[in-house]
Length: 410
Image 1 (spheres, one colour):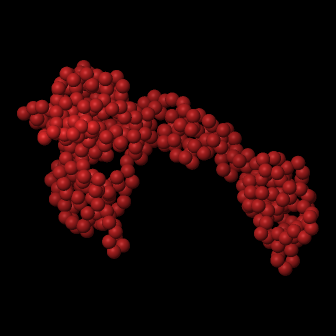
Image 2 (cartoon, one colour):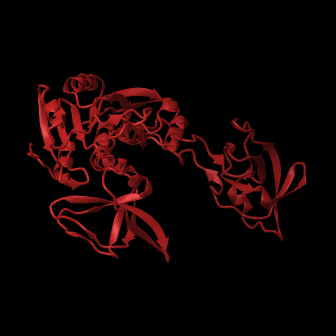
Image 3 (spheres, rainbow, N blue to C red):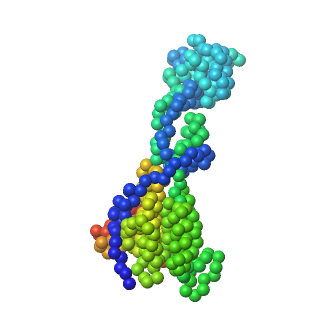
Protein backbone atom coordinates (compact mmCIF):
# COMPACT_ATOMS: atom_id res chain seq x y z
CA UNK A 1 0.00 0.00 0.00
CA UNK A 2 1.37 3.43 -0.95
CA UNK A 3 1.65 6.24 1.56
CA UNK A 4 1.07 9.91 0.86
CA UNK A 5 4.30 11.16 -0.64
CA UNK A 6 3.69 14.84 -1.39
CA UNK A 7 1.71 16.14 1.57
CA UNK A 8 1.28 19.93 1.56
CA UNK A 9 0.13 22.36 4.21
CA UNK A 10 -2.98 24.45 3.64
CA UNK A 11 -0.75 27.52 3.26
CA UNK A 12 1.28 25.82 0.51
CA UNK A 13 -1.88 24.85 -1.38
CA UNK A 14 -3.20 28.42 -1.24
CA UNK A 15 0.16 29.72 -2.50
CA UNK A 16 -0.15 27.38 -5.49
CA UNK A 17 -3.68 28.63 -6.17
CA UNK A 18 -2.51 32.27 -6.19
CA UNK A 19 -0.87 31.74 -9.57
CA UNK A 20 -4.19 30.78 -11.17
CA UNK A 21 -5.32 33.42 -13.66
CA UNK A 22 -8.88 34.49 -14.58
CA UNK A 23 -10.59 32.90 -17.56
CA UNK A 24 -11.52 34.73 -20.77
CA UNK A 25 -14.14 37.45 -21.06
CA UNK A 26 -17.53 37.82 -22.67
CA UNK A 27 -20.12 40.57 -23.08
CA UNK A 28 -23.55 40.10 -21.53
CA UNK A 29 -26.68 42.21 -21.20
CA UNK A 30 -27.08 43.70 -17.76
CA UNK A 31 -30.25 41.64 -17.34
CA UNK A 32 -27.93 38.60 -17.28
CA UNK A 33 -25.07 40.20 -15.36
CA UNK A 34 -26.12 39.64 -11.74
CA UNK A 35 -23.25 38.09 -9.73
CA UNK A 36 -20.93 38.19 -12.76
CA UNK A 37 -17.44 39.66 -12.35
CA UNK A 38 -16.54 42.81 -14.28
CA UNK A 39 -13.63 42.40 -16.67
CA UNK A 40 -12.96 46.15 -17.02
CA UNK A 41 -13.59 49.41 -15.20
CA UNK A 42 -16.87 51.21 -15.81
CA UNK A 43 -16.18 54.93 -16.36
CA UNK A 44 -19.07 57.39 -16.51
CA UNK A 45 -19.42 59.36 -19.74
CA UNK A 46 -21.87 61.83 -18.19
CA UNK A 47 -23.05 63.47 -15.00
CA UNK A 48 -25.93 61.80 -13.21
CA UNK A 49 -28.67 62.96 -12.91
CA UNK A 50 -27.44 65.62 -15.35
CA UNK A 51 -29.69 68.40 -14.01
CA UNK A 52 -30.70 69.92 -10.69
CA UNK A 53 -33.74 68.12 -9.33
CA UNK A 54 -36.00 68.36 -6.33
CA UNK A 55 -35.97 65.80 -3.53
CA UNK A 56 -39.41 66.83 -2.22
CA UNK A 57 -42.83 68.04 -3.31
CA UNK A 58 -43.06 71.80 -2.85
CA UNK A 59 -42.07 75.10 -4.42
CA UNK A 60 -38.87 75.89 -6.31
CA UNK A 61 -37.56 79.38 -5.64
CA UNK A 62 -34.54 81.51 -4.75
CA UNK A 63 -33.35 80.70 -1.23
CA UNK A 64 -32.44 84.30 -0.42
CA UNK A 65 -36.06 85.34 -0.98
CA UNK A 66 -37.14 83.18 1.98
CA UNK A 67 -34.84 84.74 4.56
CA UNK A 68 -36.93 86.02 7.47
CA UNK A 69 -39.98 83.89 6.67
CA UNK A 70 -41.73 82.41 9.71
CA UNK A 71 -45.08 81.04 10.82
CA UNK A 72 -45.96 84.39 12.38
CA UNK A 73 -44.76 86.38 9.38
CA UNK A 74 -44.87 84.21 6.22
CA UNK A 75 -43.40 85.52 2.97
CA UNK A 76 -45.72 85.64 -0.06
CA UNK A 77 -44.57 84.31 -3.45
CA UNK A 78 -46.18 84.54 -6.83
CA UNK A 79 -46.75 81.14 -8.46
CA UNK A 80 -45.67 81.62 -12.07
CA UNK A 81 -45.65 78.02 -13.29
CA UNK A 82 -45.54 74.31 -12.60
CA UNK A 83 -42.65 71.99 -13.40
CA UNK A 84 -43.85 69.04 -15.47
CA UNK A 85 -42.17 65.71 -14.72
CA UNK A 86 -39.70 64.63 -17.38
CA UNK A 87 -39.64 68.09 -18.98
CA UNK A 88 -37.32 71.07 -18.85
CA UNK A 89 -39.10 74.16 -17.44
CA UNK A 90 -39.86 76.68 -20.20
CA UNK A 91 -39.94 79.63 -17.81
CA UNK A 92 -37.60 81.43 -15.44
CA UNK A 93 -38.13 82.93 -11.98
CA UNK A 94 -37.70 86.51 -10.83
CA UNK A 95 -37.40 87.79 -7.26
CA UNK A 96 -40.44 86.82 -5.21
CA UNK A 97 -41.58 84.16 -7.67
CA UNK A 98 -41.81 80.38 -7.32
CA UNK A 99 -42.94 77.29 -9.23
CA UNK A 100 -44.84 74.23 -8.06
CA UNK A 101 -42.56 71.19 -8.31
CA UNK A 102 -42.81 67.45 -7.56
CA UNK A 103 -40.13 65.11 -6.25
CA UNK A 104 -37.67 64.46 -9.09
CA UNK A 105 -38.66 67.53 -11.08
CA UNK A 106 -36.05 69.76 -12.76
CA UNK A 107 -35.48 73.13 -11.11
CA UNK A 108 -35.99 76.26 -13.22
CA UNK A 109 -32.74 77.99 -14.16
CA UNK A 110 -32.76 80.68 -11.44
CA UNK A 111 -34.10 78.49 -8.59
CA UNK A 112 -31.59 77.16 -6.08
CA UNK A 113 -33.80 75.60 -3.38
CA UNK A 114 -37.15 73.94 -2.76
CA UNK A 115 -39.52 74.62 0.14
CA UNK A 116 -41.48 71.55 1.24
CA UNK A 117 -45.21 71.85 0.67
CA UNK A 118 -45.72 71.38 4.44
CA UNK A 119 -44.23 74.85 5.00
CA UNK A 120 -46.51 76.60 2.55
CA UNK A 121 -50.07 77.90 2.52
CA UNK A 122 -51.79 78.72 -0.74
CA UNK A 123 -53.85 81.90 -0.28
CA UNK A 124 -54.84 82.46 -3.91
CA UNK A 125 -54.55 80.46 -7.13
CA UNK A 126 -51.37 82.34 -7.96
CA UNK A 127 -50.05 83.22 -4.48
CA UNK A 128 -48.49 81.02 -1.79
CA UNK A 129 -47.14 81.98 1.62
CA UNK A 130 -43.88 80.40 2.78
CA UNK A 131 -43.51 79.99 6.56
CA UNK A 132 -39.93 78.72 6.77
CA UNK A 133 -36.63 79.90 5.29
CA UNK A 134 -34.46 77.52 3.27
CA UNK A 135 -30.74 77.48 2.57
CA UNK A 136 -29.24 77.45 -0.93
CA UNK A 137 -29.43 73.92 -2.42
CA UNK A 138 -31.76 72.71 0.34
CA UNK A 139 -33.88 69.80 -0.93
CA UNK A 140 -31.93 69.84 -4.21
CA UNK A 141 -29.81 67.17 -5.93
CA UNK A 142 -27.04 68.72 -8.04
CA UNK A 143 -26.41 67.58 -11.60
CA UNK A 144 -23.36 65.50 -10.58
CA UNK A 145 -24.38 64.54 -7.04
CA UNK A 146 -24.92 60.89 -8.00
CA UNK A 147 -22.15 60.35 -10.56
CA UNK A 148 -19.55 62.67 -12.08
CA UNK A 149 -18.43 62.48 -15.69
CA UNK A 150 -15.10 60.60 -15.83
CA UNK A 151 -15.67 58.88 -12.49
CA UNK A 152 -14.74 55.20 -12.16
CA UNK A 153 -18.12 53.92 -11.03
CA UNK A 154 -17.31 50.20 -10.80
CA UNK A 155 -13.86 48.64 -10.83
CA UNK A 156 -12.61 45.60 -12.67
CA UNK A 157 -13.06 42.53 -10.49
CA UNK A 158 -16.32 43.72 -8.92
CA UNK A 159 -19.02 41.12 -8.40
CA UNK A 160 -22.16 42.77 -9.73
CA UNK A 161 -25.00 43.27 -7.25
CA UNK A 162 -28.54 44.49 -8.02
CA UNK A 163 -27.56 48.07 -7.13
CA UNK A 164 -24.58 47.84 -9.49
CA UNK A 165 -26.91 46.86 -12.33
CA UNK A 166 -29.03 49.86 -11.40
CA UNK A 167 -26.17 52.33 -11.77
CA UNK A 168 -25.19 50.75 -15.10
CA UNK A 169 -28.74 51.29 -16.30
CA UNK A 170 -28.65 54.89 -15.05
CA UNK A 171 -25.52 55.46 -17.13
CA UNK A 172 -27.13 53.99 -20.23
CA UNK A 173 -24.81 50.96 -20.15
CA UNK A 174 -26.89 48.03 -21.39
CA UNK A 175 -24.05 45.49 -21.72
CA UNK A 176 -20.97 44.74 -19.66
CA UNK A 177 -17.70 42.89 -20.25
CA UNK A 178 -17.45 40.14 -17.63
CA UNK A 179 -15.15 37.20 -16.98
CA UNK A 180 -16.41 33.87 -18.23
CA UNK A 181 -18.03 31.60 -15.68
CA UNK A 182 -15.77 28.77 -14.52
CA UNK A 183 -17.00 25.28 -15.33
CA UNK A 184 -16.51 22.39 -12.92
CA UNK A 185 -16.90 18.76 -13.98
CA UNK A 186 -18.11 16.51 -11.15
CA UNK A 187 -17.49 12.75 -11.07
CA UNK A 188 -18.24 10.40 -8.18
CA UNK A 189 -16.34 7.11 -7.89
CA UNK A 190 -16.68 3.98 -5.81
CA UNK A 191 -18.39 0.64 -6.39
CA UNK A 192 -20.49 1.27 -3.28
CA UNK A 193 -22.04 4.47 -4.72
CA UNK A 194 -25.42 4.23 -6.46
CA UNK A 195 -27.63 6.82 -8.11
CA UNK A 196 -30.01 8.87 -5.99
CA UNK A 197 -32.98 7.19 -7.69
CA UNK A 198 -31.90 3.68 -6.66
CA UNK A 199 -32.50 1.75 -3.46
CA UNK A 200 -29.08 0.83 -2.02
CA UNK A 201 -28.30 -2.83 -1.47
CA UNK A 202 -26.39 -3.92 1.62
CA UNK A 203 -22.97 -2.27 1.49
CA UNK A 204 -24.12 0.50 -0.88
CA UNK A 205 -24.92 4.18 -0.33
CA UNK A 206 -26.54 6.81 -2.53
CA UNK A 207 -24.41 9.44 -4.23
CA UNK A 208 -24.16 12.52 -2.01
CA UNK A 209 -21.07 14.35 -3.22
CA UNK A 210 -22.41 15.06 -6.70
CA UNK A 211 -25.20 17.14 -5.21
CA UNK A 212 -23.29 18.86 -2.41
CA UNK A 213 -20.43 19.81 -4.73
CA UNK A 214 -22.82 20.86 -7.48
CA UNK A 215 -24.76 23.02 -5.05
CA UNK A 216 -21.61 24.66 -3.74
CA UNK A 217 -20.53 25.44 -7.31
CA UNK A 218 -23.91 26.89 -8.28
CA UNK A 219 -23.91 29.03 -5.14
CA UNK A 220 -20.70 30.69 -6.37
CA UNK A 221 -21.88 31.19 -9.94
CA UNK A 222 -19.75 28.28 -11.17
CA UNK A 223 -21.38 26.07 -13.80
CA UNK A 224 -21.42 22.43 -12.65
CA UNK A 225 -21.13 19.71 -15.29
CA UNK A 226 -22.52 16.44 -13.94
CA UNK A 227 -20.72 13.47 -15.49
CA UNK A 228 -22.21 10.81 -13.24
CA UNK A 229 -20.84 7.75 -11.46
CA UNK A 230 -17.74 5.83 -12.47
CA UNK A 231 -17.46 2.96 -10.03
CA UNK A 232 -13.88 1.77 -9.58
CA UNK A 233 -13.27 0.71 -13.17
CA UNK A 234 -10.17 2.48 -14.44
CA UNK A 235 -11.05 2.52 -18.15
CA UNK A 236 -14.56 3.81 -17.53
CA UNK A 237 -13.14 6.47 -15.26
CA UNK A 238 -10.57 7.48 -17.85
CA UNK A 239 -13.27 7.97 -20.51
CA UNK A 240 -15.24 10.22 -18.17
CA UNK A 241 -12.10 12.11 -17.22
CA UNK A 242 -11.20 12.78 -20.85
CA UNK A 243 -14.69 14.18 -21.31
CA UNK A 244 -14.24 16.35 -18.23
CA UNK A 245 -10.94 17.73 -19.54
CA UNK A 246 -12.61 18.74 -22.80
CA UNK A 247 -15.51 20.55 -21.11
CA UNK A 248 -14.39 22.01 -17.79
CA UNK A 249 -11.82 24.30 -16.20
CA UNK A 250 -11.78 22.36 -12.92
CA UNK A 251 -12.35 18.63 -12.43
CA UNK A 252 -13.74 17.44 -9.10
CA UNK A 253 -13.42 13.69 -8.67
CA UNK A 254 -14.65 12.46 -5.31
CA UNK A 255 -13.59 9.12 -3.83
CA UNK A 256 -10.50 7.17 -4.79
CA UNK A 257 -8.01 9.65 -3.35
CA UNK A 258 -6.68 7.79 -0.29
CA UNK A 259 -3.99 5.12 -0.25
CA UNK A 260 -6.02 1.92 -0.58
CA UNK A 261 -5.37 -0.56 -3.36
CA UNK A 262 -8.63 0.37 -5.11
CA UNK A 263 -8.00 4.12 -4.97
CA UNK A 264 -7.39 5.05 -8.58
CA UNK A 265 -7.30 8.85 -8.65
CA UNK A 266 -3.53 9.26 -8.51
CA UNK A 267 -2.99 6.61 -11.21
CA UNK A 268 -5.65 8.29 -13.32
CA UNK A 269 -4.09 11.74 -13.06
CA UNK A 270 -0.61 10.47 -13.84
CA UNK A 271 -1.84 8.44 -16.83
CA UNK A 272 -2.31 11.70 -18.75
CA UNK A 273 0.59 13.50 -20.37
CA UNK A 274 1.82 16.83 -18.97
CA UNK A 275 0.10 16.43 -15.62
CA UNK A 276 1.97 18.09 -12.74
CA UNK A 277 1.21 16.70 -9.30
CA UNK A 278 0.90 19.52 -6.78
CA UNK A 279 -0.19 17.64 -3.66
CA UNK A 280 -0.83 14.06 -2.62
CA UNK A 281 -2.38 14.72 0.76
CA UNK A 282 -3.07 17.97 2.59
CA UNK A 283 -2.31 18.41 6.27
CA UNK A 284 -5.84 19.27 7.37
CA UNK A 285 -8.61 17.28 9.01
CA UNK A 286 -11.05 16.31 7.73
CA UNK A 287 -9.76 16.21 4.18
CA UNK A 288 -6.20 14.86 4.28
CA UNK A 289 -6.65 12.35 1.40
CA UNK A 290 -6.86 15.09 -1.24
CA UNK A 291 -4.92 15.03 -4.49
CA UNK A 292 -4.28 18.21 -6.47
CA UNK A 293 -2.74 18.31 -9.92
CA UNK A 294 -2.49 20.63 -12.89
CA UNK A 295 -2.75 19.96 -16.60
CA UNK A 296 -2.15 23.12 -18.59
CA UNK A 297 -4.55 25.74 -17.26
CA UNK A 298 -6.88 23.16 -15.71
CA UNK A 299 -6.78 22.07 -12.08
CA UNK A 300 -7.58 18.49 -11.11
CA UNK A 301 -8.91 17.60 -7.68
CA UNK A 302 -9.16 14.17 -6.17
CA UNK A 303 -11.47 14.76 -3.22
CA UNK A 304 -12.17 12.43 -0.31
CA UNK A 305 -15.28 10.32 -0.67
CA UNK A 306 -16.60 11.29 2.75
CA UNK A 307 -19.08 14.17 2.27
CA UNK A 308 -17.84 16.27 5.20
CA UNK A 309 -14.23 16.00 4.04
CA UNK A 310 -15.13 16.97 0.47
CA UNK A 311 -17.16 19.97 1.66
CA UNK A 312 -14.37 21.18 3.96
CA UNK A 313 -11.84 20.99 1.12
CA UNK A 314 -14.25 22.96 -1.07
CA UNK A 315 -14.72 25.60 1.61
CA UNK A 316 -11.02 26.01 2.39
CA UNK A 317 -9.52 25.82 -1.12
CA UNK A 318 -12.03 25.64 -3.95
CA UNK A 319 -13.86 28.81 -2.98
CA UNK A 320 -10.57 30.67 -3.32
CA UNK A 321 -9.73 28.90 -6.59
CA UNK A 322 -13.08 29.80 -8.15
CA UNK A 323 -12.62 33.38 -6.96
CA UNK A 324 -9.33 33.50 -8.89
CA UNK A 325 -10.81 31.92 -12.01
CA UNK A 326 -13.81 34.26 -11.86
CA UNK A 327 -11.61 37.37 -11.83
CA UNK A 328 -12.65 38.68 -8.41
CA UNK A 329 -10.43 41.55 -7.28
CA UNK A 330 -10.39 39.86 -3.86
CA UNK A 331 -10.78 36.09 -4.36
CA UNK A 332 -11.24 35.65 -0.62
CA UNK A 333 -14.60 37.43 -1.06
CA UNK A 334 -15.98 34.05 -2.20
CA UNK A 335 -15.47 32.83 1.36
CA UNK A 336 -18.47 32.79 3.65
CA UNK A 337 -19.25 35.41 6.27
CA UNK A 338 -17.82 34.96 9.75
CA UNK A 339 -18.93 35.70 13.30
CA UNK A 340 -17.10 35.67 16.61
CA UNK A 341 -18.35 33.26 19.27
CA UNK A 342 -17.34 31.73 22.59
CA UNK A 343 -16.36 28.07 22.61
CA UNK A 344 -18.42 26.04 25.08
CA UNK A 345 -15.98 23.15 25.66
CA UNK A 346 -12.35 22.08 25.24
CA UNK A 347 -11.30 20.63 21.87
CA UNK A 348 -8.15 18.57 21.42
CA UNK A 349 -6.16 18.78 18.18
CA UNK A 350 -3.10 17.07 16.79
CA UNK A 351 -0.14 19.37 16.23
CA UNK A 352 1.08 19.55 12.63
CA UNK A 353 -2.29 19.79 10.91
CA UNK A 354 -5.17 22.24 10.67
CA UNK A 355 -8.43 20.97 12.16
CA UNK A 356 -11.85 22.16 11.01
CA UNK A 357 -14.56 21.59 13.58
CA UNK A 358 -18.30 21.78 12.88
CA UNK A 359 -20.19 23.93 15.38
CA UNK A 360 -23.75 24.82 16.31
CA UNK A 361 -24.41 28.42 17.38
CA UNK A 362 -26.74 29.51 20.15
CA UNK A 363 -27.41 32.67 22.16
CA UNK A 364 -26.92 32.22 25.90
CA UNK A 365 -27.14 35.11 28.38
CA UNK A 366 -26.35 37.62 25.66
CA UNK A 367 -23.36 35.64 24.37
CA UNK A 368 -22.99 33.85 21.04
CA UNK A 369 -21.80 30.35 21.90
CA UNK A 370 -20.23 27.78 19.54
CA UNK A 371 -20.92 24.16 20.44
CA UNK A 372 -18.76 21.55 18.66
CA UNK A 373 -20.62 18.83 16.78
CA UNK A 374 -18.82 15.54 17.07
CA UNK A 375 -19.15 12.98 14.32
CA UNK A 376 -17.18 11.16 11.67
CA UNK A 377 -16.47 12.74 8.29
CA UNK A 378 -18.84 10.35 6.52
CA UNK A 379 -21.89 11.73 8.33
CA UNK A 380 -23.61 14.37 6.21
CA UNK A 381 -26.12 14.95 9.02
CA UNK A 382 -23.42 16.69 11.05
CA UNK A 383 -23.11 19.32 8.30
CA UNK A 384 -26.87 19.76 8.21
CA UNK A 385 -26.92 20.34 11.96
CA UNK A 386 -23.94 22.71 11.93
CA UNK A 387 -24.11 26.48 11.47
CA UNK A 388 -20.46 26.73 10.49
CA UNK A 389 -16.91 25.57 11.10
CA UNK A 390 -13.99 26.80 13.17
CA UNK A 391 -10.30 26.40 12.39
CA UNK A 392 -7.65 25.15 14.80
CA UNK A 393 -4.16 26.22 13.72
CA UNK A 394 -1.65 23.49 12.96
CA UNK A 395 0.77 24.86 15.56
CA UNK A 396 -1.64 24.46 18.47
CA UNK A 397 -2.85 21.39 20.30
CA UNK A 398 -6.42 22.48 20.79
CA UNK A 399 -8.77 25.16 22.08
CA UNK A 400 -10.18 25.75 25.54
CA UNK A 401 -13.67 26.37 26.82
CA UNK A 402 -14.30 30.11 26.82
CA UNK A 403 -11.87 30.84 23.95
CA UNK A 404 -13.07 33.35 21.35
CA UNK A 405 -13.29 31.62 17.98
CA UNK A 406 -14.06 32.76 14.44
CA UNK A 407 -16.93 30.78 12.94
CA UNK A 408 -17.08 30.52 9.16
CA UNK A 409 -20.82 30.37 8.51
CA UNK A 410 -22.54 27.92 6.17
